[in-house]
Every structure is written in C-alpha cells, then in structure tokens.
Image: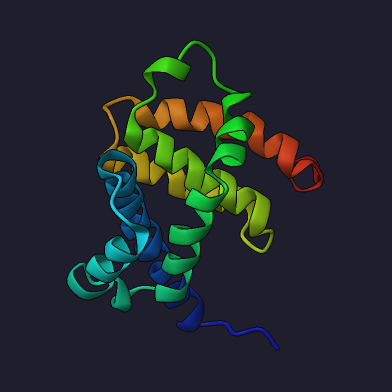
Length: 150
C-alpha cells in the first residue's frame, strides 16, 4: 500500500529542498569551475542538505553535469532567440527540470514545471519564470507526450 498522510508532503518538501540546494550548487559549479566533490562536501556540511533529501541532491549534482551536453541540447530546441543570453540561474533550472522530465517519470510533469517556475521566481530574473515556463511547457509535451495528452 502506498504511503499517505504526513509522509508524502514531508517527502515532497525534502525534494523541494534538494532542488533548491542543487540549483545553488550547479550555479557555483558553472561559474567557478570548482570540483564537484568539493561542492558536494561544502553543501552537505555547510548548507543544510542533510535536512532535505541528500540522496536526490547527490543524484542531481553528479548526473546533471555528466549529461549537461545532452540536457542543454534537449531544452534549447524550445528556446527562441535567447541561446546566447541565457542566465546561469535559468540555465540550471532548465537542466534540473529537463533531467527530471527524462529520468524521473514518477514525478508528474506538472510538478516538475511548477517546481522550476518556483525556483525561477525565487532565484531568477524578474520575468525569468515566464521564460522557464515557455521552454518547459512544449518540452514536457514532447518528452511526456502520453502523460500530457491524457
């Protein structure tokens, strides 16, 4: 039987926390070029990752950089006229969401988009969330065609 009640929202909050922290970690990785192991240690020990979902944080922290070329090529198909001016925050939000759309079919696409929009509202440019939504909506329809048409 599936868990219900207080366990499900707590798990959701922990993943939300992991996404928040991995966005910060990926931003640091992209701009500084720091070693991922150093970034991992810093976030695990100094940034409260343990209070969220550390396993999910670690998956995203290591898998996204290892597949960054494929992820970027996937979401960039849905960008118009912004490829050269993509903000590092929005770029990493799109990477996280694209990775989740492809590799975490258990997470509904609407949840992934909503989480990405919330990250963009918190960390991105003033209208960055509109841009993120404008890329992820058609991307999710392509990647999750069966789910989006149901």
